Image 1: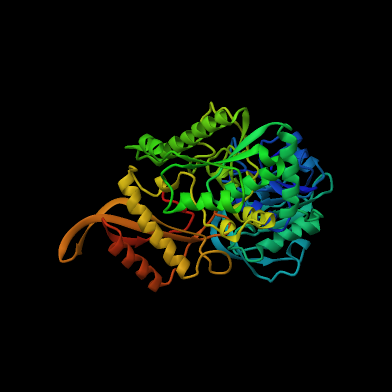
Image 2: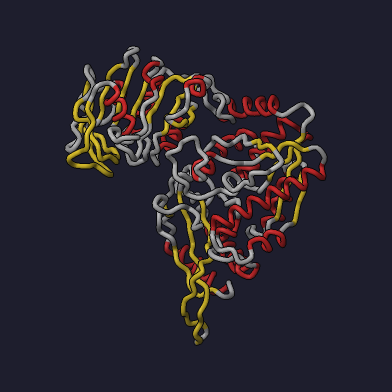
Length: 528
């Protein structure tokens, strides 16, 4: 899918990003309502916006204050377009200031859970309970609304928690001081759906089926009728869906390349070949490059450097395989939207880099192949929906996420074959026990991702009446919908006890196991 138009949809909501950490959650909620949307920088020009056939705008929050010198400003086309606008937090402040209201520093800031009183039952709040539990995160207030605007909600500390009025072009303009996109706001999805369907009159035609058909068509138009491509196949759901989509567009002109980089989980290389070559019938080349990657990673401890080394080596191998096959021009990758966001190669200058993904920010600048990334603007759960629609096996669709750099970012510090062997065995125990407890897969209570981490720490222990000074292994298990946010999984104590007991008894060189109980944010899912 491309940023040049709404693939599989006749309409779009444009989300202008002013630097909020929640902007991507807005996109998730809009997509859940089956309305296509794209996030663009507030500096995007009208031509780029108009190409999406927008039905309305959502303005995100942001860390700045609208009255500060150099603060991001509202593009003129937003109010001149005649389209409905919803401003959230900073976005509401921009609308208020632009239309003649007053924004100033709040005497009492609001962060976290708050009750909002609805002053009037507008279309935005139709059939919602009153009061409403919402999530606030602001240090400024609307001190006075724009002329002819109606205040529709307030809290104890925020007299104007929501407002409604019209633009100079007589289009609806709505503002919310709270964040409807976060799960902590009850009925937040209902509020956004009211805006999408009642205010913007969206059709809701963004579905997995429409995405598949339009993406296959777009790939066929982009790639020449005789041009060939290779696909970087990892075995995960992302690359599997990407490969299947492109194979339907190009047929025999696509060759999948699976690289064993020596950083895979126990039994993974054999499993990938069996599923994708034998079961799915994809044209597959297997490359054993374990020694090459481990040589490059020898002595490297910095996780950013690891990712860049791995990204570069992957590309060099794909380029070499492409040359063997002939005149290959294209490389297919299963890059997802969160990968793009976290690598800060997103459209917003306000975004901060969290980590470089090996297949985004870690790519070499001089790579020879052009990229096809059909999933670049999808979230993980959307990819799974597309995979099911394509008819991929459930064990592929619901396979837990695995980082592209593999175990290199789960062996903290320097990577070696010995340390990888310790981690592989510990990780296999974690996966076996969680699967045996039937906590993986889909549905209520399912664990999104679970794995072991080999830390660089050693601790004193007693084993067989003797003193040990051995490795500490951490276990990580999280629940999530899209990987953008995650909570630590409340695994049963009996399960944790079995995992710990098996690891210290079966894995040589480990005498202590700890469980990570940190959410994302403030942590990331991976440790590196």
